[in-house]
Length: 329
Picture 1 (cartoon, rainbow, N blue to C red):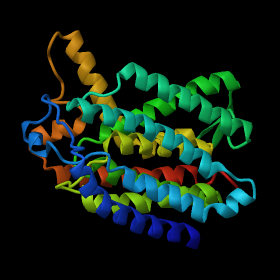
Picture 2: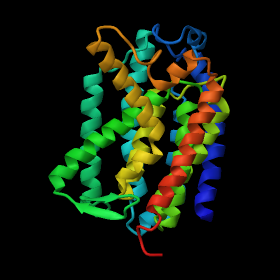
Picture 3: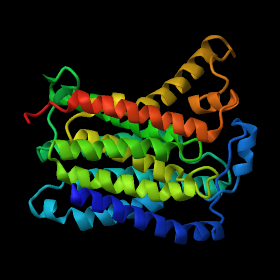
Picture 4: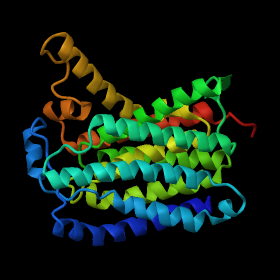
């Protein structure tokens, strides 16, 4: 517990200090965010806000995992490093996307097809690595009922790979308001830190603590009105870290309750697009994803962020109750 708290505190300090240095550099490089024309018109005021701020908590996570996780690595436990490595690959995909947007001065980078293929390949490699090092089994643990369903590895791999790709992009989609993805994922990180401690999975707990602290340092600059955005660099890294921790703990279905906001955001987008096509132009939501629907309904950004974070906290508490008796106490 002490190690995890120290990891979080260290990550907070590093992230905040990196932000203090990084934001002026990003401004000098004109690494500003381009805002989509189809978004709420008042978002155009955010045009030019520096992006790729996710570098702040990424640097913090790397340093903290290596500094505080050496004991686990010396004992042959590389779980946190595997998850961090996967998250870094996802972040690298996001970095390429951000860089392309900045170069073209528009809000389009890598094509959806390329993103999907790169993320799918990374997910398959990550899952295979976890399985080959005996950190992951093809037995699907079901929270709340405390039942494990054995599956064929090939079936599990296909299922898990698509879950990961979906999760990574759901976190990316949630990053649409100042502080939204960071605040929601901060709550999810605290959940994984607590669960790792409860299940005696200290290596993953260090990474979860590092993410929580790093995100808190990032939110110093990202909470409304944002001085910097995390960009796809940050949101895809967070998506990789969140689903990576779930699979490293061999409990992927816990993503359903703890990721309720990610799922709601994604489903609102899918429903909107599907209904629009089926009805030839009609819409269910004022605008998708869900946070924009609420914005256009008069909700402030701060209200949405606090509400979504509160919902996440409630579902994380519920999820913890649903998994706490998996192992004998």
